[in-house]
Length: 322
Ligand code: DGY
Image (cartoon, rainbow, N blue to C red; front, side):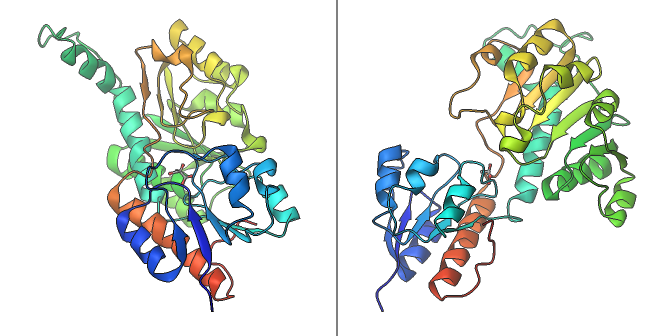
């Protein structure tokens, strides 16, 4: 039986690429340059399986570019860069890699909370610029975490892992907004207060951390009104998706002093970073590092590979999203 033709759109960890190459007729992206929309569309007619990442826009034009691909095995948990309705309409299965990047992403949320609260980015920039004049009692004063309220917008896997770190590790109180209360045991473990209304949570939280999926349902959820509802001096942390936040409103709130700071790992049109933020000192800007540790990136690849392997054997794919 001939091997499935599989296209991997970006470089993956070497161990996963070689495992894929053992099992399938794989085309790798040696140069790691993002593929054009035309090239992605053409691939739909040339391969059996497409393995994209968050850096590829798999829109309806791409999906309708050819009729050979039967599985889109995404490397990553978020899939708002894939037009799921268009894939469904063509009978194409879509899978993702949930679970394996929970801890890594929660670690980055805590990194951003700590960096924003303790002004680590500002301090590092000052020191590297040769501007540090020495220790003094009033230098770069930040905020403590103990006893402060972490308000999670969404309390799924990554939200829970972030809240656990903040509560058990740093003595923060946990509050959250979601469609429904979380599992009772988790709520009890975290002593978490549920807010069915987003603005009520925003008014209470000292640190607001976003943990909802991207896409149309959450686009601009944190808009100018939501930011105005946030407590004066509070912090906004985003490790989810850039489109959830109105960045002009965020920049204005940081400049006016309404917000104490922000920590962002994701942006609406990556790799572009909203211009308005670049000159603002009290925002930490990371380049989408949420899942970027070696163990996690290998686990993500192995998870995507398991989806492709199951599809190849005609079995149910382990992580279907459509
Ligand atoms: C994901 O998996 O959705 C991340 O954002 C990419 O690491």
